[in-house]
Structures are given as C-alpha cells and as structure tokens.
Length: 312
Length: 305
Image (cartoon, rainbow over all chains, first blue to last red; front, side, top):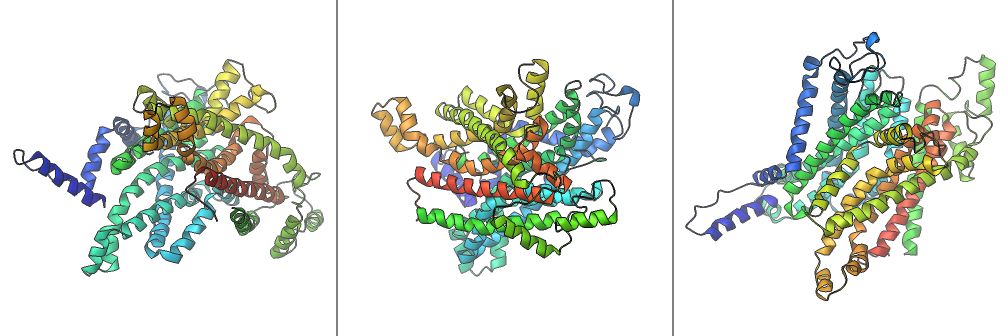
C-alpha cells in the first residue's frame, strides 16, 4: 500500500514538473521514510545518543576505567573527582564502570525481551489477521480480556518463585517474563496491519496470478508489516527497560553480582541523603537512554506514516 | 446498555478465576513456605502448624477450600501476621492505596489535559515543542527516580516536605507527583493528538466562522471528542498506576496494600498475596468496565447493545 503510493507520488511529480525538468528519480517507501526521519532533528539526536550508548556498552569490557568488581575500600563514597569520574559507591567501586556494565545488562534485557514480545505478538497477531473470521474474533477477544490486567504482579510472582535460581540464569526469566508483558499490543498492531493488507488489491492480484499463500505472505504481507512493527518495537524497548528497572528496584530483577541501572539506583537510594550521586547517575543514564529511544520511536512513526504525523 | 454491563460483569468472572488459579498455583510452586524462614522448628511443631493451616492437605483440596472461602468473602488468615486475617489487613491498607492512586490519576489529568490542549491549539509553536519535549522526559524517567529526586530536593535539602509517611499534605505531595507524572505526560500527548484531530474538523471551522468565542469552541465543541483517546487510556493508566504504587509505597513507607503485596510475596504469605491479587484484579476489571461505559457515553458513534 504505502509502497505503491510512494511510487504514484513520484510519478505525479515527474508529470507536474513537465518536460523541462528531468524525471524525478523513483523512490521507495524506505527511502522516503529515511529522508523524513533525517529531517526530524530530535529523532536524529536521539538516534545518535542511542548509538553512542550502544557502542559504549559493547566496548565496555575494553574501555571501562576499572574492573566491575574492583573495590577500593579506602576510597568509599567519594564524590565525582578526577580519579573516579562519577564517584564511588560504599565499597569504593567506580560508579562510572558500574554504570557502564549496568548499561550492558539493562540494554540487553530491553532488546531481548522486546524480541520475545515481537516473536509472540507478531505470530499471534499475524495468524489472527490472516485467518480472519471467527478465529480472529476469538483470538482478539482473548487479547482484549488480557489487556486490562496488571502483568507486573504475575512477573513479580514469577521472580519470587525462582528466587533461588542463580543470578545469571535468572536473567532468562526476565527476558521471557517481561516479553510476555508487552506482546499484547504488538499482536493488536500486527493483526490490524495484516487485516488491512489482506484487503489490498495487490494481494488479490497476486492470488489471481496464481501466487501461493507462502509467497504472498513473504513477499507482500511481511514487508508491509515491518513498518509498524519496527516503530512499536523501538517504543517497546524503553518500556521494558523501565519495567526491568522497576523489578530490580524491588530487589526482584537483576541481582548481585550482576547490576543493571535499576539495581544501581536501588543501591544508591540507601544513601540518598548523603551521597545523592549514587542514585542520580544511574537514574540519569536510564532516563537519557529511554528519552532518546522514545524520540527515535516517535520519529520513526512519523516518518513511516506521514498521514499520522499529527495524530500521535 | 444494561445488557452490555451485565455481559461484561459476567465475562469478568472467568478472567478472575483464571487469575486466582494461576496465582494460587504459582505461589505454591515457590520453594519454601510461609514458615520455613523462621528459626528451625521441631518436627512436631511444624506438623501441627501445617495441619492448622491445612498446608498438609493435597494441593487440589487446598485450592478447593480456598475457593469455597473466597465465595463467602473470606480471604483467610494471614500466615505471617498471625493475629490478623487477610480481610483486616486489606481493609486497613486499601483506602490508603486507593487514595494515593486516585490523587495520582487526578494529578495526571489536571496537568496533562490542559497542557495537551494548549499545545494543540498553539501547534508548532515554541510552547508546543517545549511541552512535548517535557512530556517526553516525563515518560522516560522511572517513577522511583522522580520520587527520590523529589524527596532529596524538597525533603532533605529544602526541608519543606516530608521524607516519608502518609497523612499530612507534606507527606502526600511527593508520592502523588512521582506516581502521576509519567501518566500526565502520556495524557498530555494523547490530548494534544486528540484535540489536533478535532480542531481540523469542518464543524469547528464553521463555529469559528460564525464568530463563536474561542473558549466556547474549545469547551463545548472540541473537548468531548478530543479527549476520547484520553478516556480510553484511563484503563491502562489505572493498571499502571496500581503497579507503580508498589514501588512508591515501598520507598515512602506508605501503609497501603501495594507494599503488603510485595512483602507478602517475598514472605511466602500465601493468603495475603492471593488476597491482594484478587483485590487488584477485581478492581482493575471493574475499572475497565466503567471506563468502557464512559467512553460509550462520550462517543455518540459507539453503541453497545
């Protein structure tokens, strides 16, 4: 739908400018969207920040000033200074290092859990949309019913049940649990898109020219699904990171020896009145990352669907 | 309309049943029971405690008994607070949590709707961009960070507000703002979007052409339609505020049931956990039904038969 619209538009442009100008080069949906995205300065700024944070997170083991667990007991609770750019915690561990390592975990949870929610949600929604009719109705009623419930309670219970599990295995639980919280909206979006795509003329055209279901799905349905899915995925990552921070803050998410921004903030809260930076810096890191991700998501949404630009 | 309400209420029961059942079995799955944290008990003492609370019955029998009691409105005794029943604990904590949540939601609406409307009416102006940027920040900062910062600035440094507790207004300001801020940001964005869509409509253009006062145009003609997205957001917002209250109550030492839920889950206090989950779920389901009905009232295009 959007692909053919963009092509029409460019052909129109070619006709309007007449024969004096050369024909406008054909453009595709993605190129159009990319151009629009680049024009949105806040999104670009957000994108740059996120890419920077991601690079720092990936390179952390090599560029962190200290080791993750290096304690310098004599240097406990120092304010930011030349040696420890963001100060130290009560055990003398460099806060900048811990925030860098914490970022790795927070980002990882965000992306992997988003992936889980995409896999569940897209499969469910695409199936419902494609089948249509009663199956679709039933499946979406289930989603409607599940929508109003507080999942975090079940996730909390889940984390409580598996409290005895060692910390590094527990993170898989977070991936799955948090992914299960978010899949509902993903499935709704997917199903809506699938339904509208199914009704398009090019699908009927493909069928009448003999394309089988598989080919239709892969060549027509999925590429048009990708747009909203990408947008929503970009907006899901910050939601999940927020939820993980929430859980870690309650002591139920990431736990020692691993750290995430949420657990670092929780640690920092203990000494808020005397050493506020121990909470503020992890909180700031989280806020900046979420902020940037939200901006990119918004920008992507505006870029991929220009009619929706003013209907956030 | 009444039939719709009845249908929704009836449909809520199976959902509640599923939630209760899932929670019940999840709690029992957790290693350790309510009494395994205490100092090691001699075998006979432990056996008699378990017999008293029927913990030695087969699991399905415990489930059955629980459901039977539940039907009578009895949520059972608390395992951890041995002299109080779950009903009592909930009765003490529920009003506090409800008040906190309601005030947070009110805060979100009172701040968010005007902000969004102003942004919509002055679209693409400095105010618009500024308020949308601020709301983006509001959406991105976790509520416990907001709370901690507020406590630090107003409670510790400036000493104008209390650091924790509940009761006086000095104690209530920080938690309410922290809990509501994120949703005020969402609501601002939603009302802006909704108002933008309405303000473009032809009937608004006609009203302006007729020379109607701007204020009247906004309130009488645009608000109802423009705020529909906000109304449908109220459902998920309620759920989110309830979830958020868990952390806020824990940090601020507010004696509500959110704090009880977390503690009871960690303590393996089966009955109290179940009780709070039942309560929250019931509340949310009813709240969602009310929101749906409200939406139907406001949007004349929708009719529920």
